[in-house]
Length: 169
Image 1 (spheres, rainbow, N blue to C red):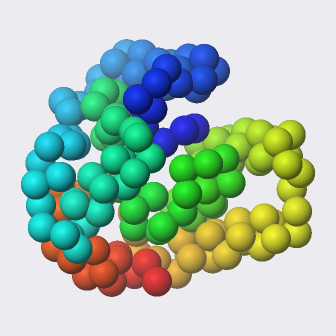
Image 2: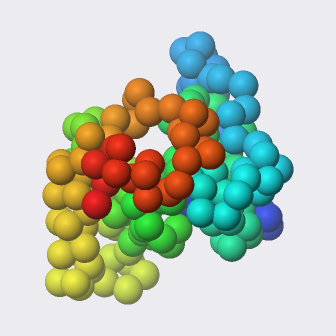
């Protein structure tokens, strides 16, 4: 899963996957109105969680997810909280972190797909394996619950304070 929508057209496989998530969430009635407004995030003071989120999207030339389920729309916030990249290994680290925080089959499936992609691109080195294990353990130590967190209530707080509240070291 690539973080958000790139300013250019996303990889066709990724676009199909994201569209499938939207169709399924619509069918299940779990799609929500847009949560992340990039202009609001950009207007927040430097050092806040919300501004860091907006700056991250800008730095990676991404647009926020604004369709589908809440969890999809909030995905980029997990990157900001954890500091994991938006490349394939960073996405795999996010899934390992989320799996550690709360077991969900979706994290296993996404993580395995990302590992396959990483392995095809550059091989799965011992260093990458260690990074994934560390991300999983970090999730286990946290009090992060992707199903319950409400980042929109924390956007104006300092990023360090948000991480502290969620037990993300």
